[in-house]
Length: 136
Image (cartoon, rainbow, N blue to C red; front, side, top):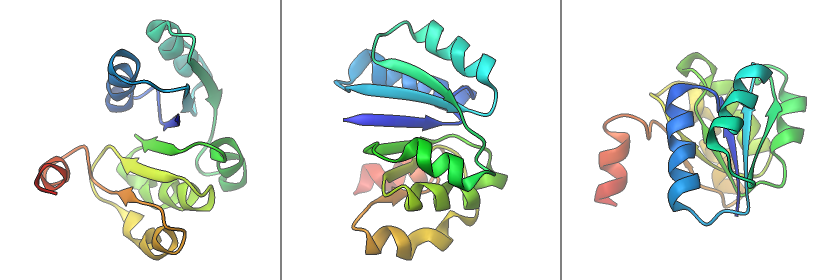
């Protein structure tokens, strides 16, 4: 499985990626962030051959979709104000998605994910996100 960590240099995504490295059996984990120096620093900190990094700007949908295409899952750690744009990119890239922050405009993409038989979990980084998944 290949995981793309969007906003991967942010605190929430960085810690989630550490969990993936320490406890997961993933083929590839990519840190995708607007700040290339921060993305590289996180990849260096994780110090795992499965981890690489790339600069992405979620406001450039074409670039972001192209970068995510082919990944199985996108962990979305971008800010809440970007949730609409980031979830649209994840849907267009035909990936499953897990939003690691609060709730924003990602619900507008629900139909796109359902039509592609993909799962997108919004607001996982906060209650009720985690508690909803635990209950399921």
